[in-house]
Length: 392
Length: 140
View 1 (cartoon, rainbow over the protein chains, first blue to last red):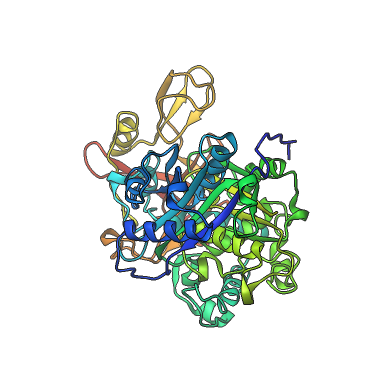
View 2: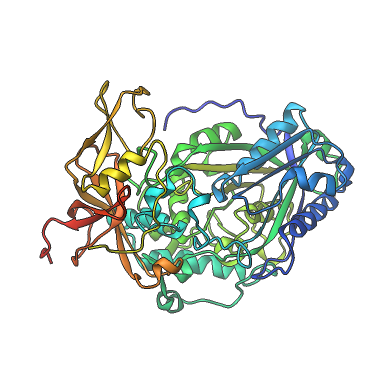
């Protein structure tokens, strides 16, 4: 890795409030409703009033409710800052990074980040809603080849890793099982029935090498978080969760970035800058919430964010290295996108904040001061994003 | 023969020559007259030297499989009669960072490194698509 430099405003802003709706397969309400509920809950959790909020940050693929619509409905007369970013989970942590920049620079005082989707009942995220009209520049070459779904693109990366390192179906299955175990005592989780390796291997093929249980859950719901300056955070109800560092940028789209080997984790492109921003390294991370739209992306991120050499993850997983209890790096402590729900990654932020506060109840990990939270690796968009959160 | 479902592309100003060459039976990529770099998918500038001196040139269509998947999920009406089908991601001989996906029309055991070649197929007068075929059909 090259020596990375960063002038990120380390720990100058903090997440002080979190909110979410129920996660379900059919919310029965609009994304507008979901967004409003999550934002109101997060602002109340922060001990703030809606009139304190002067920035909104969100992302989506034209499937949600925009800041310029939400702000006046929430009683915000004028925004001092907004982000309304195209794309899905690959940019999920970039909105936290941008909110941090805005607050640290004094552009805005209080920024709420949110993601609201009816990802199952309205705008299915599995790829079946793909239409030519909505496609970015590089989509026609993929669609004309029969590739319309993220599962297909990331399965191509997974297969490449299996070919190079001998990674097996059972190795992917252990990642699904880990998520499920962690979801069992999570009241927010959509999947709370136990799963065995036999269950995993018997689940139907979606895109070989991915079975049903390699894939996350199309979900209806919303998550929101509140960012203010670290100074102001001291006077608010909860333990401040400082944004130690964030990075967003490089990812590996399967066709257009000029990369040659999909088995190599795209996380390596932003990890040096992320750790430089935070002034920390992989050994400083207590637990990690890793973007698990599919099982394989967990493995790829453990490698790419510097916790394992390429090919080493399966044996570490067998040894329990990533278990919530007793593992050296507990991951996806709530069950992740695979078993809690797919809120495009923002439910990872929610869980990390609860853990750092010490409010995770039966899920609470022993060491919970420093968390890595990540977005998708960019196999679809070419972007990726991540943040390091630090308890004050 | 056509293998796998296709979402027909809508050619744009930059990509139209790519799709129409395929319709006429040729796999053509943009080649930079200044630096010799191949670029794909279609774009208005060379991704190596950023020049605009790109010309469409026929390539060998030969390459090797870097990765592959077998899609079982019917992601829409076009998929229903086609699943399961195999898509390969092919590293073109001309340049190692050009990875072109497409259905594999051959009944062979797929693996990384499998030698394949492009078979352009006409959809309309201005749009064609790529299917891949194994060089040795009987390599099992």
